[in-house]
Image (cartoon, rainbow, N blue to C red; front, side):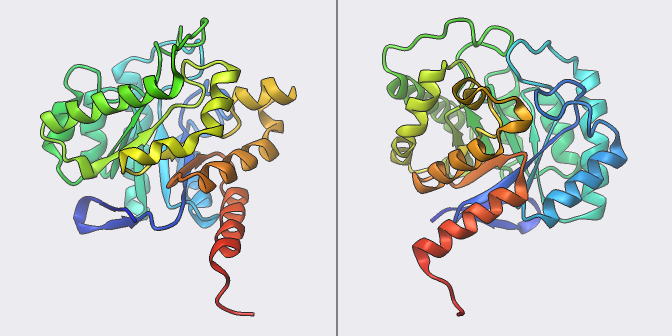
Length: 282
């Protein structure tokens, strides 16, 4: 069982899988771009996700969909920092910031963010140093082969799982060497980030392999193109597939499920928990 230590003396239990609700404050994210890029709308949506059962709100100001353009530091700060501040003023909820930029990380933490979720696994210059300055802030390290603009251009692996695990182990070692305690780290194998359809479903089928690192694992496959390619479904038609993926990942050891559809995913996880552990009352 894992428990994450958070700022201001708070904790987050991962004794059973929990839901991280996605809040994209971007104009161009693949599924919900432009819906929540105004502060009031973003905060309102965050409160809805919390009411639906999300235990973490993951705020992102830069789309990482395949082919996505880079976003300037100033633009990203203007998108996310006011939302973090506004949400923190209304709620003591757990706030995650989805960014790779060290300055965004630092300003978001100062504004009230609790967790850093980095698709580049703290590889940007200065990112490790920022996290080392905040010993009570967990960080999620994700595997990505390449960069968002090019990651889906014929990605190849000699051994998919071994290479992902070696990358994550190297990033764990880099964190520890920089003064970031191992118990603060969450791992994300990176569905859809530099992986073909086959890679993604091989990863889903063997997700339990990541338990060997003995760290919390995040699964982020909500509405992703792996389901669109398999089932010929647009992004807004992938709920059933996303729920199936969430269930499989939870059964195979995921501690955090990052999703757009919070209420439905919480229902799925509650059914799984009841089936595995029983219910307290008739």
